[in-house]
Length: 219
Image (tube, rainbow, N blue to C red; front, side):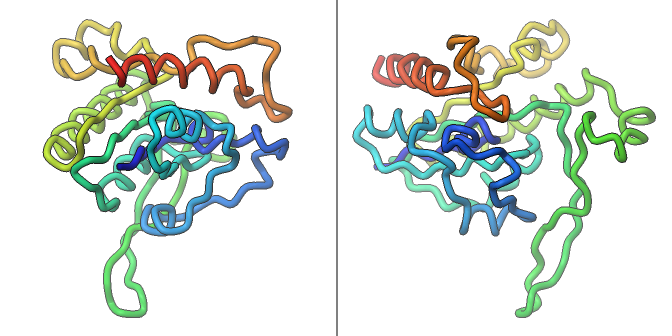
């Protein structure tokens, strides 16, 4: 049996290895990520949780991921029926613009045309003209709902987690996407003094979440 995890740098464990996020490899398309992605640290929560559950760990966290990138990675991964899957949905404000391309065998694959985030100054026109927080959360809710429907018969257990609990507190979103009531709050506990050098959550956050998720899965 395997524990399969998807997410952003919080799942990959960037910072826990003592390196700045800029020292890590990033992946330009989901197929490449699924095949080549490497965990940043064995102290990241997926590895801690897999050890407690006595499962093989397949940590597919990718630093800088958007919900759309994570969703496409899920669609490209080959699951087993006895897998336990946990999806850490990144900040809904992140987005990615796709472009389809042909490889050497004339097979289509998806690659990044542009990655978008409000903090990227050179990309603020998108956020000035098209982005709203509600729309971003709405899209994220669609990815969550579709993921749970897609994996319903492909794995043993599936959990969605998010550090954006506001999504599940919006009455309009909740009335449209009932799945949001099942999303677990992520990294809500940890020592405020325990942060990595690049600002990512430190070991106590990963340990506390591991223990919470272990109790949920075991129950």
